[in-house]
Length: 185
Image (cartoon, rainbow, N blue to C red; front, side):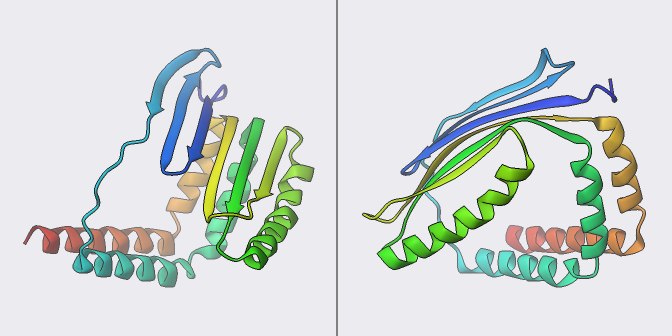
């Protein structure tokens, strides 16, 4: 079971403020263990300055402290990528900004960046389209990957055994608990 791994299929579409998607997780390539559909639900968000300050502090902590584990994280990602087999990777982005020049500039950057995975991964089709009208970020995609769990366990365990990583996780959990306790009070 660990050698055969799991297969993850994700389909999504974002148009305007509507986000729709389907997530399926299969074992043995046929047995569905999780199937979810995600329709767009409009939620009214209440913005609180205190909560945002706490989130900003957590993000600053993550960025600052992640520098100490960045090399270990790179090694983990390299090893995890070897355990992933891509069956299909498709994504299309429609990008429009208020300035036509900015739209063209960022689309150029996206096209330059997208050539790398498109040339390295055979079933990969990542595209971007400029939209010279109203500001918009829309897109759709389909991801179908298989993860060999047996190849994942070793690198993850060795990553978690590094002292800096454990300290990073402990510090994050501690800050998160403090933020939750202050929020309850």
